[in-house]
Image (tube, rainbow, N blue to C red; front, side):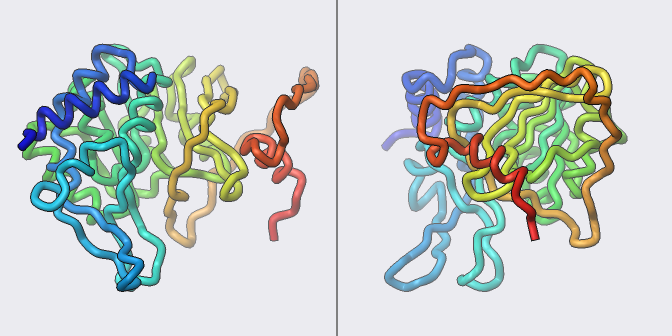
Length: 282
């Protein structure tokens, strides 16, 4: 029977082979963090019984929790509802962490604590003092804090509206969102350092948008969509909260540039996103 360390090493090796992991620091993090401790159970949908079934990671399926697989980790009180939280595929997490070009001494804010696995990878790489994570779900934050502490990681966690960031601890060198948003919350731009990076999944619909890496330049942030597909659950917010107001931009110097389409636009989430900007949302 393989140990979790052997399975974690095999997972890291698989991600390296797939080109999702290249940095020695992140390879070491994936090999060292026990994912099953942070994801002690998850949910599979039993189609025969038409209900969600809880699976114990360590005793029932240690192999799956160390595979490149996303797992549902919280469901609502009714089996008919959509899952409330999940842990993304390790390959997507690793790809996003490498996209951020994180360096020693960087302070990173994660929006969407979830299980705490991503925060653990960051803490292993940067030291917990440089890692900050927020989630609107107080129960998830409490569980993540407890499980991270059992591994010796003590990042700063808070149960707050993620769209507001964490102003008390700003500025941050990097902000990574493990949830989808229809538009980038302005507090994130304000809380990242000038020259800093924001990586977020912008989705105005199921397939209208994708991951985008933004660079802050003074009073604005700009960037490009990633060519590879990614998909996250939509950010959960208090019903009475609205996105922060963006300042007006001077667009006098904007120069339109055509972009050639190499594939059918209906197969490209970025084109769907651009098209959605011209459609009224009622």
